[in-house]
Length: 270
Image (cartoon, rainbow, N blue to C red; front, side):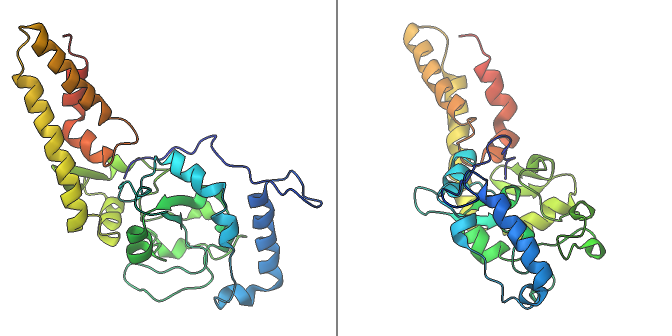
């Protein structure tokens, strides 16, 4: 995981017809959900309420998330858009929620956040559909919020929030192996529940780890003697500069293992 910055990047979905012309559709639809719940709470508490993917996965929403997240999954940080469309993930589940120890559906979910921009992220299908699904554990379950009239700030999610928290404070790496940082309960719950240590992820991360390790070794072995050597060192340094860019996969892993060393190389006078 890596911190996602959505500041000032909210897409404005405009209703082109009717009395609401020019207004933000996400906000309008959210207010409708709140009013609907108050008039018909049973639909939400029994799981019969339907939510429109045409709204939370609107043609303006997903491209905005893809751009903000550089086409990477908000959880495993794999690049997904070149092989799949990706899912619009609700950090707080919209319809129902489960905990880590109990997969029984609890209703209602966070219905008032179904169309909330701050609750939407881009996720790969594996992280979203196989692992996270409706899971949303809290540090203290007694502070669970059950409807929009309660104070959401009373909750403390057990999963690392990809925007509000710095994932590197909770999750780190030793080589390509993902590790809990400083005994973080949030880091442990996130890694285990979303299976961020699964073998397929490790193998892909390890390929990148070994590539960067080789680039650094090559750079250090090239002598500063002849112009040809200097030119080669510059080429290798340019490659290393690329791996620290936001769009590169597994940036948290790269920074944890090589961040200081690569920065020292980039600052090296050739």
